[in-house]
Image (cartoon, rainbow, N blue to C red; front, side, top):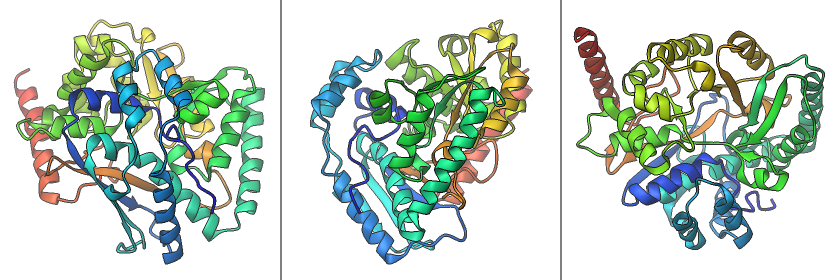
Length: 403
């Protein structure tokens, strides 16, 4: 196969926003990331594994071009010191372990500095997806069905059957192929819509090529590693540490906070007046979006903050129909935005892969995500996961007692 990843910008924007903060504040942190396929009926053949390993090796031969670095430097919150670091940065193939020793036939793990391993997640998942769909199916037929489905949904956006306010494409990690994602971003950027507006993509290379905004702030790894990577921290306060270090790096810039790393209820205990004022909004990634949105509106109201000046960004498994329903419900109450991934970049006649790369260790200790719903977390040590649950429960219970 031709090389799948042809630029180090072929990743999501939040990898650079987190990467800069890691470089300045946590350059000595070390992490382990583990691949998981959640599809029970998917198996990767030895030929697929061999090709995936080859594609990762090809990716590790890349370095940033000066044109790419100039583009990154033009983003107002990226600092020259980080750009200078990226000028000499390259992926390390020695950080990867890739073999067939997993139930699904594909084992991938990366170990090294957080600066390095964080950057591997998105390109690795993009490689796995494209290799799987090109080798498992007739790719030309899949791509044809992708384009047909995309054109149908695009027409409904143009005519106003779907009205979703501001939305971005978030599909790099689970795309059918680089070709499919680029087709979608190109098409979306060339049209105007009745009550919708395409504002950008998480894919930095495509944002640069099609002159749209690169979208992304923080992911769960930020809260997990900042909050749980320091062994002196009580992990029930992970959000406080993560928000505090983010503000130290960015001030009021780049401010969409992610709420569900150790449950949104626990997050709100730390998202008090200072942070609720400084951050421009919050992102939803698990649980009922309507209940979550109402919870956030109530939180802003109790703090005396005008919710119409804040953004609720929804990004959990959306399509245009569900986004339209959410927008209609919250329209006029707050600013609403959407990050839509697989539905845009990998909607075909076959089921998409549900694959992830998650942080499983930080500085030699387990880390875990306790989401708002079951099944979105990934931890290798059940004892640690139970410990984290107990810490959160203790904090929530004592907070109730103190009221």
